[in-house]
Image (cartoon, rainbow, N blue to C red; front, top):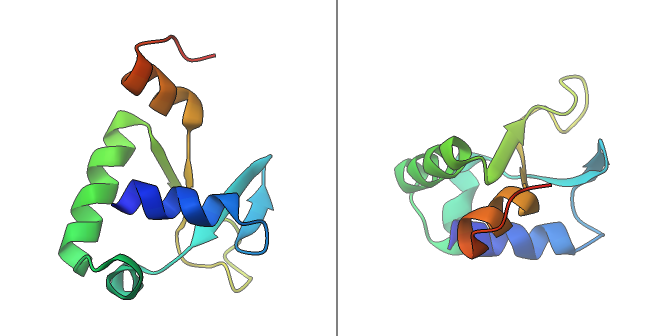
Length: 89
């Protein structure tokens, strides 16, 4: 569910920030429950697993702006490799 919602927000150009040619979304762990019904511990677990797979990238875009919390994006090349068995480019 986390990945589905993250993909939804990434596809909306009016939300988030473009950084290094990727669309990043900033949502605090505690706020995921509001959006997708996951408790903070479930969100942390899901993000951790997806990060280890390389599917979700997490970084602080700009510590001095309102995007000082973690921002999230999806590495679609890695996702495609994992789902379809194709090599990442």
